Image (cartoon, rainbow, N blue to C red; front, side):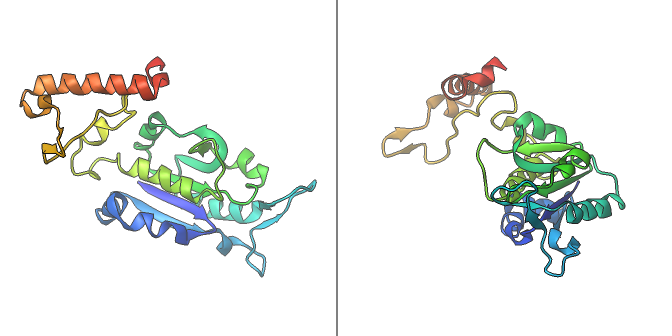
Length: 225
């Protein structure tokens, strides 16, 4: 998979993309991630990519021309399954949505900033708008990082144990059961005996029961779905 990210702050991705799962996926050649500095597509001598909004109001708006030029340059080289805009009023990201992305070959992620982008970009170039929550961030970079991580970890070959991602919370509309490791007793806090029994069938039944119980308590809406 190839992921192209359009941003005015490419440096924000250096840390998250240089460690752990995403780093390993890049080193294995399973995923390619390219960062595109939107300022490089500005025709303004100051390399500015924003301007005042028509009609007035506080805040700046990202201009149409640099974004258009960047997206068109990328589209001239390959076909994209989706051109995604990270914004607070987009469709809320969830596991079902993420699962659909793993069959994609190429995606573009546009990171908004300021008061957002010129609406004509959303109307004519963007194919999907995504939000990571009902709150406002300073820009789309953090959202793009979350989206990228959630997709990459599901791609076959990325995780050491292929079944690990399948047992994550939300994969089957259930929250994951509690997990324990050594020591089996600490400060008189003991691991449930069932997990030490070696009875795989009983263990799986216990885990399912715990998942259902946790979901009822913490996210009952998932069970309704």
